[in-house]
Amino acid sequence: MDMETRDRAVSRAEDLMDVYGRWPFKRESALFSPEIDSGEAGDLMVEEVIASVVYVLRKMDKLI
Image 1 (cartoon, one colour):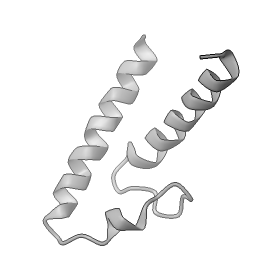
Image 2 (tube, rainbow, N blue to C red; image 1 turned 120 degrees about the vertical axis):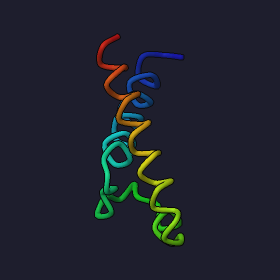
Image 3 (cartoon, rainbow, N blue to C red; image 1 turned 90 degrees about the horizontal axis):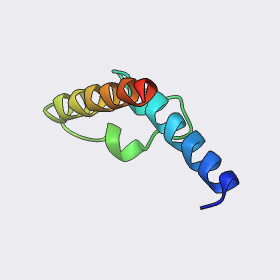
Image 4 (cartoon, rainbow, N blue to C red; image 1 turned 90 degrees about the vertical axis):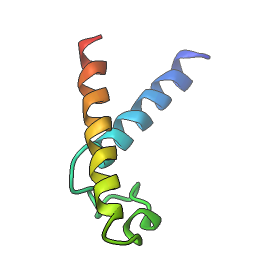
């Protein structure tokens, strides 16, 4: 993978972590998928768990 492709991938990953790494999700972002917002009330816990996991992974990535 060349450096330009790698940089774009890292930038995309950071954008996704910014949207999905906080609870509640940033619904105004262009990266937010409306399918995630169309679930039942029980699905909100799943969203919160996803946000928590992404948040932890983001913090771990900054340590590396």
